[in-house]
Amino acid sequence: MDKIRLLILVMGFIVIIVFSIYSFIEPTSSSQPEGTKINPIGQITITPSPDKNQNSYSVKNVTTSLLKSYEWDTVSLLLFGTNPLGQVAHGTSGPSSSSTVMDIFANKDLPENYYSIAFPQNAAVTHGKNPGSFVAKFQNVISSVELQDIPDDTNVNLYVLTVAKPNLKMLQDYKELSSNQIKIDDNRAYDIKYTWSNSTERLESLKTFIEGQDQAAIVTFSSPLQDFNKVNSTLDSVLDSFKWLGK
Image (spheres, rainbow, N blue to C red):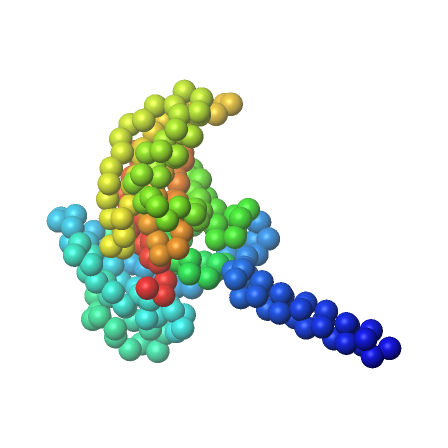
């Protein structure tokens, strides 16, 4: 009997250790089911300027716990922030009549891959199929944000050249229009603009790969070919709003 009790104790101890190691190694996902509506955590006001590189961005009504994530400056963007209590973070600027207000959405599905992005106020934003993904629909555009693991021995540019582009060439009537190495939120990024066809119409898409600490974010916009040029400025604003949280 003593041997049986000892064996049970040993087995229980092993199970506890294995479970603890597994829980420590595996990232915890808090993803909601696909199609679940997402509520914004704040707003960003974009005020155009004659100098494209001097547009002003005013962030307001951001959830207090996330406010610090929005107190940043870059070379091309002057950002202002006001927390819910009205305390000024980077100065104030009243929105002009031509300003665009966008809603900010934060994704905290996977540790080390938290991010935020803003979409137009009329956008319908839901959780995507996989943890860390968003789907947004606005102005005849379908947009998605997904996380992609990139091997440690490569970078986002090499991944696009060796994996992403060959996969895109499998699309029906695929034609690349442009591709560029850029920076978003001071992270290396690479975008591809292309046209292709689905079963009913000709489409134009812009796919942007943004390098992160752990995984890359892939932001994709697609709309009917005749409509794409009408939303170029909106798509630029969405991309400019992307930020990895917790940096």
